[in-house]
Length: 248
Image (cartoon, rainbow, N blue to C red):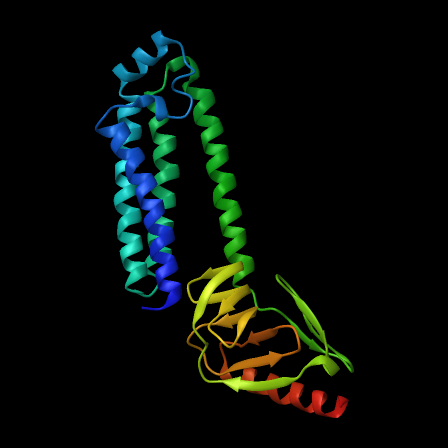
């Protein structure tokens, strides 16, 4: 089992324990004080909400989303293609959609306001996630000048050509141990990652399972970049090799 898989299991296992524990306390033990804002309401409102089925509906939503998250984690552990990503998307849709739906059980005097704010929050969340995914899947433009390599776009980088110590084509991506600050979804890796030794920490602009990959190394770090079209990656390698060799 790879180190990245172990980290994934530990992280998501802890998440499931927290989510499952909260679900158990609300559904089985009826500890409604754990529901955000419930304890801050007057006792009369709390009793009416229970009568309307408001906290019970939240408990069901917690239970359903726990099942979805659990299945998503299992798919991720067994590395089913896009299984974890699709599961998280379903989790988010059910969670936010469920929160909106649950407002029907709120008190009539507050239902309209809470529903409106919940819809606004959900729309902003979807837009933010959608924008993050869109930006994450965009190719970073690579520009080679007389003395510099410039990778523009999200998590962009610029290196002096004279500082590049090694250029190579890799047939496979080394094992990813951890994402330290970057984007990772549906086989797209972009940003700062830690790979297996001897690579360590560096920057990736990679489509997984699309060999070859261009590997660049300087004294402090490395960059691995590729394109979906192998010919584009090879062309970039040849261009950069010629310029770097001529710069020495």
